[in-house]
Amino acid sequence: MKQVSAITKTRKVNIKYNIRRMIMQIRKPALLLLLFLTGSIVFSQNPSKPDTVFKFSLEQAVQFALENNYSVKNSAIDYEVARKKVWETTAIGLPQVTATGQYTNIFKVPVINFGETYLKNTIPDDQPLTAELIRENLDIDTKAGPTIPLGVKENTQVTFLVTQLIFSGEYIVGLQSANIYKLSKQQLYEKTVIDTKEQINNTYHLILVLEESKRISDTILSNIIRTEFEINESLKAGFVEETDLDQIALTRSQLENAARQIERQIAVAYKLLNFQLGIDLGSKVNLTQNLNDLLLRVDPGILAGQELNLQNNLDYQMISTQEDLNKLLLKLEKWRFLPSLSGYYQRLERAKKPDFDFMSPDMIGLSLNFTLFTSGSRISKMNQARLNLEMAKNLKTQVTDGILLELEQNRTAYTIALDSYTVEKKNVDIAQNIYNRSLIKYREGLLSSLELTSANNQFLTAQSNYFSGILNLLNAKVKLNKTLNQL
Image 1 (cartoon, rainbow, N blue to C red):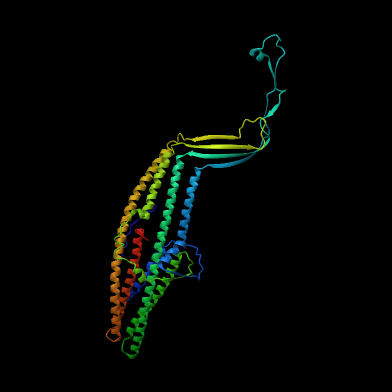
Image 2 (tube, rainbow, N blue to C red; image 1 turned 90 degrees about the vertical axis):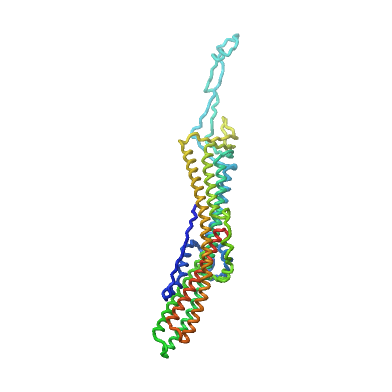
C-alpha cells in the first residue's frame, strides 16, 4: 500500500529585464510539458484511425478517456476478475461432484475353496451325537469343493463422489477475504478513474495555455517585424543608427525561435492528450473550450473553505481496507487451530462383478481433519499476522495525518495560485499599456530602440508569468478537488 506523501513545492523566479530572460520566460511552458510527459504512464495501442477528427470540451474529454483509456479499461477488467474470484472462493464450500473411471487387469485372480464337510462312518449308530463327538469325527475334503474366484481378470469401473464441506474456519475467513479483495480492486478502479481525470484536466489546461501563449507570441512577433521594417526605413533616411536595427533584428530572431519551440510543445502536448484519451497519436483533436471558459469556473472561496470527509477519501478507504484484510489474516491463523469437517457420498459402478463380492456400491461417510502438532509453526504465523496488523494500524494513522496535511497544503497552494493569478492579470494589463505607449513614442521619435526593447521584454515577461499563473491556478484547483474527492 502506497503511503500518502506531502511535498510542498515553491517556485522563485527572479525576473531580469533583458532579451535573454525574455526568451527563457517564453520557454517556461516547455518545462511544464516535460513534467507532464514524465508523469504520464498511459501506453496503449490506439483503436482510432489516424485521420479521425475529435472535438472535445473538457467534460467530453474526461468522459471519453474513462471509456477508452487503457489503464481504466484494465482496472475495470481487474475488478471483474476479483468479482469472479469471490464466486470461486464461495464454490469451495458448495457440493463438489467428481467422476473417476478405471480399467484393471489382474494377472492371476485369487480364488477360495471351502471344500466338502462330512462325518466319518466310525460313529456307532446307537451312540448319541454331541458337539465334541462331531468335532472329533468331522472331515473336510478341500479338493472336492467348488473353487470361487475373488475377483475378475479384467474389469472397468466408474466411481461417483459427492463431497460437501460442513465446517472449516479457513473457508469462512477465506470467503470474507475474497470480498475484501474485491473491495480493494473496486477502490483501485476508482483511483485509476480519478487519476485519469486529473491527467486529462492538466493536459487540457496545458494545451490551452500553450496555444494562448502562441497567439500572444505571434502578435508580438508581428509588431516586432513591423517595427523592424520601420527602423530599416528610418535607417535608410539616416534618422537612426544601425545598432537600433540590429537590436530589433536580434529580438525578432529570438522571438521566431521561441515561437517555433512553442509550436513543437503544442504538438507534443496533443500527442500526450491522445495517449491519455486512448486514441491514435495521429488523430486530430480540437479543444472546444478556452481559458476564459475554465477561469469562470474558479470560485475564489468555496474550495478553500470546504471540509474533508475522510470516509470519502480514496486513500483513506484503501488503507482502511488494508487494515481489514490484516485483521482477517490474523483471524485466519487463529482458526487454523480448529478442525475441518466434511461429508461425502460415493457410488461405485463396475462392468463385471465377481461371484464372491462383499463391496456395496453405495457409501456415505464423514471426514474430520485436525492437525495435532506443528512444532510451533502455527503460533509463529499467528504472531506474524498480529504484528502485520499493528503495522497496518500505524500506517493508517500515518496516512490519515498525511491526507490532512496534504489538504492544508493544497488549500494553501490554491489560495497562493489565486492571489498570484490576480496580481499577474493586473501586471500584464499594465505591461501591455506600457508597451503600447512606448511603441507610439518610439514611432514619434521620443523613445530609443533600446527602451522599446526593454518595454517589449517587460511585456513578454508579464505575459509568461500570467500564463504560468493561469496554469498553476487551474491545476491547483484540480488537485484540491482530488483531495476532497470531488474531481
